[in-house]
Length: 311
Image 1 (tube, rainbow, N blue to C red):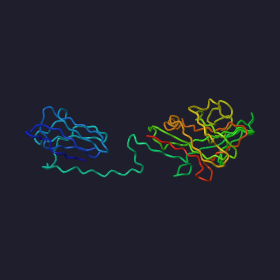
Image 2: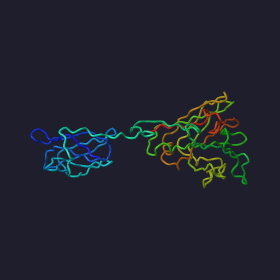
Image 3: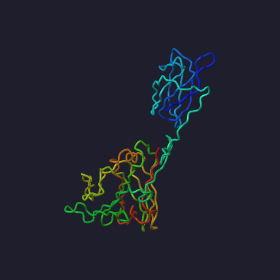
Image 4: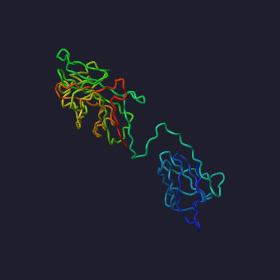
């Protein structure tokens, strides 16, 4: 691609600077009627609003072709400036026409300008998203000969209460749609409870110990990813970061609740999928039945939703 810019000859053949915008693409630029200068010319290309802002000023390594009085240089796709060919254009217009700029392709998902916040929401089965893993572990039938206890997968509810047995829920969202370089500014979790007694509260923690959804050893003793929990049923050494708590769960049956999550902890999920071990949810109140609609429940509006705002 070759561009031509206006004359740089000023009054009395004195040198003046030039500045113009062109498409942000690799191209050779040829400036005509450029006054020769023993000190040469300097050229910079700076990205500006999706275009290159070209600045030409006296004093630099680029030299004018003497006979044709043209200044030729190349701008790479990254904005690097190098000397161009010495061959002038076949015809030098008195008033050069503006360069023809190619129409850039429209991206399917345009990247927002730097500093612009956007929010992605993740719900199983919505907009093709299938990145939720959730299950419940229980001390039911737990023993030395059955260290797994009882695990509930592909169930329409997550169990998180302490009655005759201790039951905790694990849930993990795949957030790989968010660029790893993004900065998380806010996050929240929305879940639907089924509660017929109240008041109740649900405690939440960010998991640290790895767990594998498909492992046969995942359960009350182990995460199934090569190591046991620090205590049966998930101990304090298996969690990290700030805790959170759903409050005021009442006896009205199905109810949707929302809780803010620590942005820094969600940021770790975005930076590395290996660091994303999801959340554990538990109700420590003895004898109170509390259920959470899972990602498999038929009513999509009741499924857990993670919302992440980032820049």
